[in-house]
Image 1 (cartoon, rainbow, N blue to C red):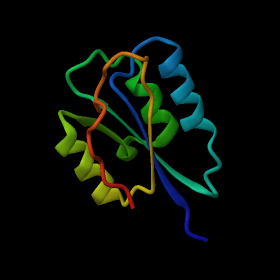
Image 2: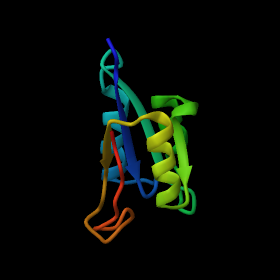
Image 3: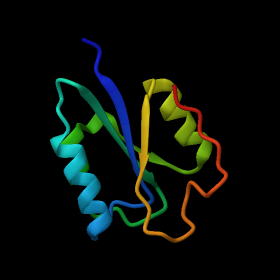
Amino acid sequence: MNRIKVLHHLNNADIGGTTKTSLLFAQFLDRDKFDVYFSCRVDRENIRLEEFKLAVGQDNVSLIRDGNDLQRIIDNKKIQIFHTYRSGFNEFPENGTHINVL
């Protein structure tokens, strides 16, 4: 059976509830059904980055600079579900940003 490819994206992998929630999803998604990936901004404090690498694997973690990097990851990994976590502020990807997912 083909696994569904899921990308979890945060602006940073810092300390906080949003980051912890995304880490728990990344850790506990059924690996028989899902290939799990994680991305966050390279220009942010990413204190929990090593925890994400342990949860999803070093090769499944990406640091991005902009929407072009994000789109490249989605295209190269053939992501089917893109899940972004936001704190409620106007954060990347901003409203109106178009990201193509299969």
